[in-house]
Structures are given as C-alpha cells and as structure tokens.
Amino acid sequence: MDATFWALVALIIFVAVVIYMKVPGMISKSLDARADRIRNELEEARKLREEAQQLLAEFQRKRKEAEKEAADIVEAAKHEAELLVTEAKTKTEEYVARRAALAEQKISQAERDAINEVRSTAVDLAVEAARTLLASKVDSKADADLFKASLQQVKSKLN
Image (cartoon, rainbow, N blue to C red):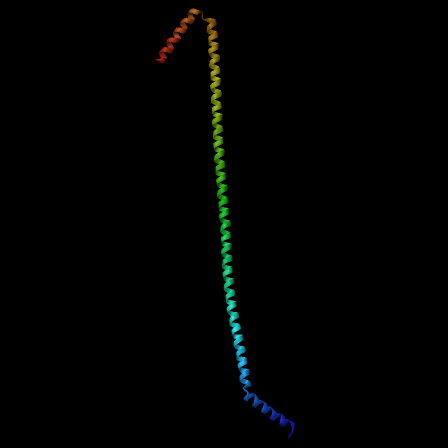
C-alpha cells in the first residue's frame, strides 16, 4: 500500500470528519452572517448618503434664500438711496427757488424804495425850487392870493 492510497484514505476521513462536524454549515453560516453584516453596512451607508444629500440640498436652498435675501436688501438699499438723492435734490431746488424769489423780492423792494426816494427828493427839490422862484418873483399880496387860491383848491378836492 503505497503512500498515495493512505493519503486518499486520510483525505476521505478528513472530509468525513469535516462533514460530520458540520464545518461546511458553520462556514456557510459565517459567510451568511458576514454577508448580512456587509449588506446592513451598505444599507446604512446608503441611508447616510441620502441624508447627506438631503442636508446638502437643504443647505443649498438656504444659501440661495440667503443670497436672494441679501440681493433684496441691496436692492432696497439702492432704491432708498435713490429716493433720498431725489428728495435731497428736490429740497435743494425748492430752497434755491425760495431764496431766488426772496432775493428778487428784496431787489424789487429796494428798486421801489430807491424810486420813491428819488421821487421824494425830486419833489422836495421841485417844491424848494418853486418856493424859491415864487418867493423871488411874487410879492406878499400875490403870495397871500396864491395861498388863498391853493387853500380853496385843496378844500374843494377834500370835499
């Protein structure tokens, strides 16, 4: 009997003992458990990936909302600044117009005052010149007659 035969017998006995001890079932059970554990880990990884995608989508949505809100704030600030500039320009124009009108009124009043002063001075000079001329040409009797005539004229105009 040669060594190959004994090796074959030992192999058959080994396989029989392995089958009798249910080693293939243990290996199968161990492999099934490992497959289940890997399947559970893959399922958990898929769930975590989905949660991460949801969080990413939510953060992107919030970022877009924040960007839109910031853009709205900037737009509102620009609009308010334009309104303030327009209002300031309008108020400045109104102020300048009021000041110009006031200056024109003052100039007009100064012109009237100057004209009245010139007239008043001219009347005073004319009266003084007429008095001087009349005083030199008119005697006292003519002076009294002129005074009475002027007095009559004033009385008739007053009545």
